[in-house]
Length: 399
Length: 88
Figure 1 (cartoon, helix red, strand yellow):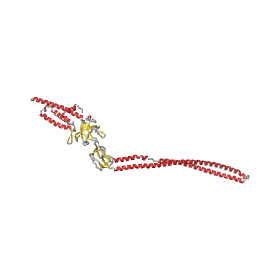
Figure 2 (cartoon, helix red, strand yellow):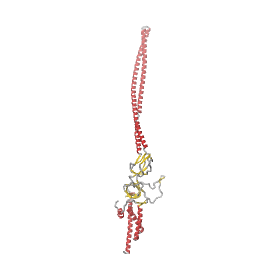
Figure 3 (cartoon, chains in turn yellow, cyan):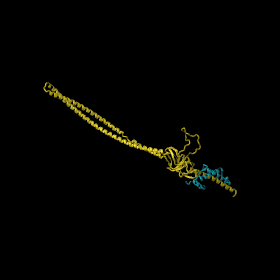
Figure 4 (cartoon, chains in turn blue, yellow):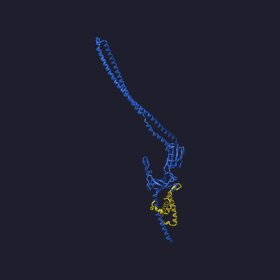
């Protein structure tokens, strides 16, 4: 091969190489850009899981601590036991109160029965007084008849007295002139005197009968008063009959108190609400647990998530239900499968602060704005519970 | 994955057929996680130097056109190919 031909060949190879590299670079860059748009990826991702701060619902000293830090527990496993004695006593007290109420109800029923009898007695007295009113009325009628009778007897005797007196008046001159015997005169006088006595007696009888009538009327009034009194007594007795409603209405309250005491007693044994890991357990038996104050934390190991922050421009290519390759930086050679569950709808906005009641807007303005990033919640479908830890760094690629 | 021109053609490259993309696209260097493209760029720079040495030996470097364009292009090409091969 001569010199110019070789030079020419090298020239052509060089040209082809230069052009090839140029074209290949353009093509490969486009491929890379397309690929990273189609499969958005981020290394700003963290492993998450739900966790709860385990707090007892009753106060007391922890008598038994059945778990250790960083151990796996199953749902229903005993976590710790709180001193249950005060709650046992409270339950006994509540049960005793309940029994006392039942006895009170029985007593009240007995008292009510007695009061009912009193009402019956009062009613009987009322009936009796009604009868005595009738008797008194009859007595008044009888007295009235007696008065009438006495009055007619008096009229009778007065008529006889008048007759005897006129006889005497007629016969006295005859006695003086001795037309009749003195004996006849004495007879007439005696008759007149007897008539006078009869009349006086009849008057007295009338007065007596009138007095009896007045007495009978008073007795009737008294009987009427007695009726009113008996009626009032019936009413009083009726109102004195207690009802057990107030006691019976307390039954549910006492039962609720018993149930509440029983619940408190049950709550002395705290069990795991789900499968998970115990963490942040830094106490021993004897620690005083307060209701609602966390004792340790349980991480829910049933579901693991990765929260990956994606730029807002990438979100157009991320949809719920898409498959995600998840890598943990602790184990970069293992790929886990995830699925996009949701995308966050809010992050704290730039210039979102308020100072003194007014929005705090910065005066400086960037020409180039960095895109916001939103947390995308990725549910890991095949988590290895021994590898996943909350806060672990992850890399995610949405496919 | 639908076989479009964009993703079918790179798949045909033998280099890419060797690739397994089951590694995390980040590399742990003594507790710091470096993004994959930085690793690719580092390897790309080294390989570009190697290619330049070969071109110089074959006396082709003078023929490939403007070097200020050629080498950055070559670096970009190699970096991107490594990325596509191992971290896609």
